[in-house]
Image 1 (cartoon, rainbow, N blue to C red):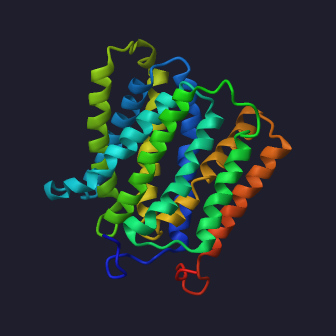
Image 2 (cartoon, rainbow, N blue to C red):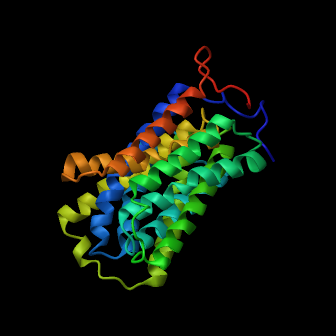
Image 3 (spheres, one colour):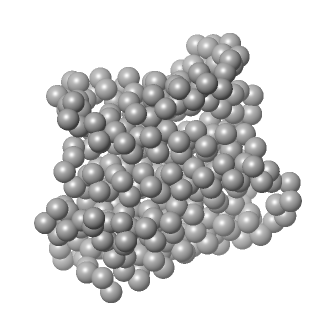
Length: 307
């Protein structure tokens, strides 16, 4: 069943765009830090610690503001099975097998998948500008990730795990957009965390035992917890808030910014250097984001109708 004009909030505005860009920044840094942890730690325990920390933090915030989910709000948690549940579980397993740049390249596929699914599932017909922006962003991420370089050493299993995670992330975007027509963003974020926590905890228990000792050093535990609160808590809350204002395809068209911000973080913080091809890829991503902003009607702050 599609979203009708009566059901949907204002189609889009600059507030939603700002929330999405901030959410992308909240994902970029912690994912790079998590990749470093996964080189020497099991993926599921790292993810479980992250989601426990984020669930506790978001629940306390919701409790303080009187926005905890009620018993009748259980369906708001269903997207949590996809994200942060299955999608991040698969992402982290895949990250142990492939470079972070390849992961960023594959995650960019979500833009195209959401653009294709939003019309039949949500009744949100994307404009030509949104479609072009999504595929410009995907092309830019391909160049940023060095897709033109040899990839013979990349693990097919790692690629398959990440692509599966991308599909679940796309379904989360579609489901969250549908539910956000009548939900509070913080309430939905907490409900999704609870569902995701149950799934990840069950998966960790079923696939163990694991060596937890390297993860329980105070400094390591704190780093994992902070990364989890930022990437799962802050990012998901901002993402859900943005979906009050943004059609799903417009939101997804901004996701390639995650890869661009990750690359810039490597340059600024790690002293990494970008090739001219990667610079061109970054320019494409910036161009795709500018095209999304062009979708905003400058007089009303809302997206124009289908073009």
